[in-house]
Image 1 (cartoon, one colour):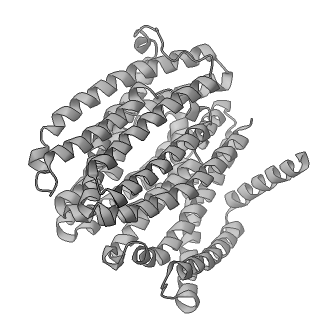
Image 2 (tube, helix red, strand yellow; image 1 turned 60 degrees about the horizontal axis):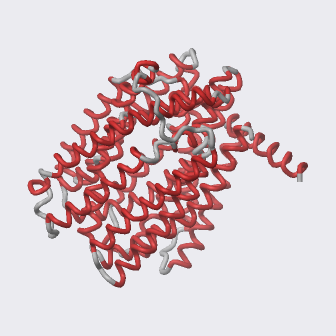
Image 3 (cartoon, helix red, strand yellow; image 1 turned 135 degrees about the horizontal axis):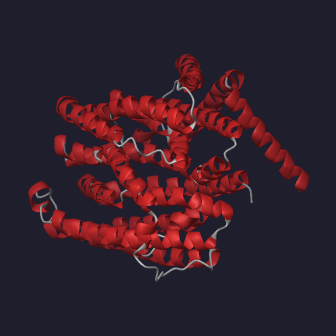
Amino acid sequence: MSRVSKSIKNAKVGAFFFLVSIFAQFFTRKIFLDFLGDEFIGLTSTLRSILGFLNLAELGIGTAIGYALYKPIFDNDQSEINKIIALLGILYKRIGLFILGTGIVLSLFFPYFLGETQFSLGLIYFIFFSFLTSTLLSYFFNFHMTLLEADQKGYVVQVYFQSINILRLLVQALIAYYLQNYYAWVIMELLFSIILSIILRKKITQHYPWLIINSDESKELIKTYPWIIKKTKQLFVHKMGSFVKDGTDNILVYALVNVQSVAFFGNYQLIFVNLISLTQIVFSGTGAGIGNLVAENDQKNIKKVFWEMMALQFFIAGFFSIAIYFLISPFIVLWIGEEYVLGRLIVILMIGNFFISLVRSPVQYFQNAYGLFSDTWAPALEIVVNLVISLIFGKLWGISGILLGTFTSLIIIIMIWKPYLLYSKGFKLSVWNYWKGFLPLLFIFFLSAFILNFIYQNFLSQNSLNFFKWSVHAFILSIVIFTVYGLLMYAFSKGFRDFNKRIYHIIKAKIKQS
């Protein structure tokens, strides 16, 4: 199966499960808020963010191992794959023990910074250690999943992960509705994680019967692959930057505002995180495909694919950003109530962070494929800028100030520095070649947003009184956005035209085969 075919299969499976999953998440979120309360949901979100901090111990090993697997997968070198996965197992088990120990030590301080909530410390500890156990399963039992991702078989994981996740949400909703029992709700989180772990363990043996699940390889493997350890150390700092960007907002909202605001903020986050997850699922095999593409070293094709991806990600990011701007507030009102609506500035900043998170993807994919992780100062600067601005303006402006810190750090590091690194160290070209392609795409987006705002204000604006009217309104607006933005992209972006031609030829070939 070709790279494109595998990517399409990942996309189809991911898109289907996303539609089912997002319905389940929004449906159950309303039940959780109504029957378990804002404070409980805010508490669980905060504890998940703390676990995200502990997961920094993963050090980016999964990314480094994925990078190391591209070539042996391309060469079908089963012996080398077994050695690399054995190394992953050794490292992940050490990390799992470290996370467990650190989690226990960190939990000793809960009475000091989580003691002001309405919940007992017993419940807080029960939630934390249940979530911690679920996290540790991936380190001790399911580290082999990295091979499926590197081999563009992420759809295998998604089928079972999303199915189990949807079933868990529905069971938890029933518990919330009928029992309002916090402990039973948390137990389901742990139980379904164990079930998923068992299923995935069986699937890896089916797809790779030659893979040695419990390796007896010596720990000397660490000395055999020093470059993986080097890449891992570099990736650790990068992961620190990602965590500060993605994982500290809930903690900062809890510390600078209040626990209820974590739930309010989390409602909006649920929308943005799901949309980002959709694109990650749809493009789940892309990273491995680019790794193989770089291994082939066809420079002309590499540049062509890069700009096709840039154009596509711009279109996706722009489409969702414009739609969210017009539709999110009335949706929140209809979904959970007018009292949960956040200010317009907060929404704009969240959209800005969301937009950058999507359009950065091609640069990140190719950076990973080239193994360009040596700029450890960049995420360090990202962390400093993010936290300093978030702390200063978070005290002044609340959630808006916290989001401003994230936005500023993204502009400096992600939008300016990372393209320079890729072009200078990876493509071996002047970064001006990047900006010559990027700035027209950005102009097309802003031009489209201006035109669509005019159309909306004069012809499409309405107050949605129920979900049916909102859905019809959203459908019509989506068609207008797709048409206007799509036509402008097709007219002025060569990468977008090339991508459409590629899809056309794939569909044409499929029709001929059938």
